Length: 272
Image (cartoon, rainbow, N blue to C red; front, side):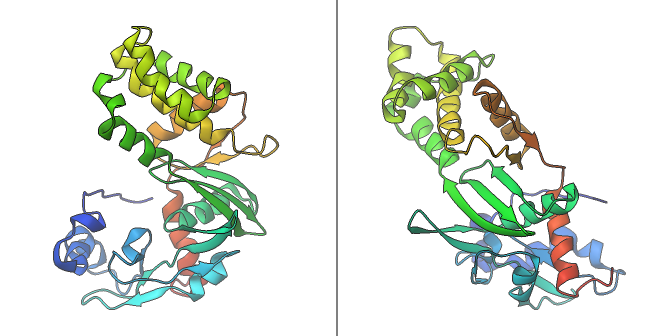
């Protein structure tokens, strides 16, 4: 990673489909004088609500399948611009999809010198993925982050939550996931507060620990996963996994950039 820039311009924040303008304002100076360097874009930018829809590739899928399905976009002043398509599988009888995580997983495999593994990508829609032979073979999505946000901000539970504590509430939530059915344990975030058995500052952490632990218990015990994500989320998942007696490891930084490079090389957009 030579340089990083972050901004708030998610697809919902881009007005009137002005994605090209955002690309220019964000990194036009990177491209100036650098010839026709390729630009790789992944995630929701290639969704139906994004710039141009890049249809999903059916899994199993690895670098060859994704590179063959890259969606070209013409942007004045830029060399090749490509949207990564994402992957579609069927999990437990229903379709499941990912956009963006495929680049992180392929990048992690490349950075770690592996062709197989189990991966957990925490987030709004957490992913549990399996890779074999350098390709993503299966995955499942867990709405852990979105459910937490909905319960925290749009139900009666959130009225008795404030701030963040020292982590003891999180640990109690992890323990509760192993002791009681999930939907029953969720209500405990309210009743423990009503009985003054859980501090207001620990209630949100309790709910977080409960939901994360419930997600992690679905992982096979014999497949130690690699965590890929933001540092704060990875730390939470590692803490929950440790309390559950699960072994996990963190992926190297900047997996998505490594994945983009791998796809660009696979597609012949980079000479080396």
